[in-house]
Image 1 (cartoon, one colour):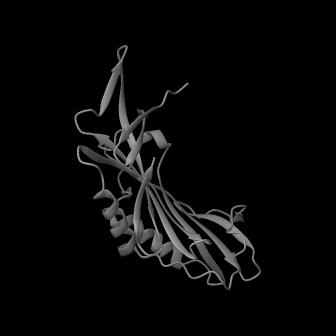
Image 2: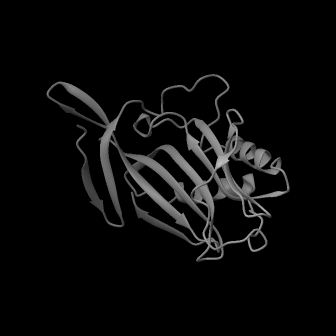
Image 3: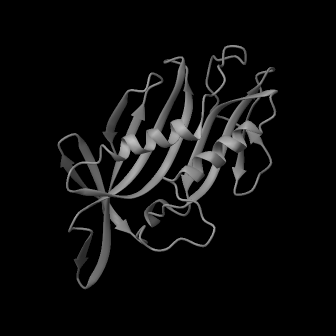
Length: 203
């Protein structure tokens, strides 16, 4: 059973766990970095290709592999969308386009007409990523971007963004217990309101 520790650092609560792969390991040829412009250009391109009869209310980019692999390679781009009849579906657009499936997590009490068009551009997304990376506490370094999610919030009546970044403490990137060495990472979660305000939350 995996053991978790928690570390309190002023405004963040980090999760300590083993990390099977470090982000410094070279990614496969042709891969796309999660914190690079190409990932968000690809997401914007694919979102623009969604049939205009559907409105996208959720767009996500997730890193390749399991969470504790700490890879900084784009793995999946997914959209959730609604049509004028109120039907809601979820579909993966990358690396391959999958068959749409019913979305059980569609926003409640929101009609197609009330749903504003999602405002997603590579430029704005990358700015969000870089603004969050700039908030990494002193003494810690970027390891990988685990997920980027833009989703309609019915309470805020706009699109909010959630970014999860993994970091490592400089000079304390690994621990050794009984001859076994494990890499260590901490997780930061950022919430960006529709008006652009960024709040760092406990990971």
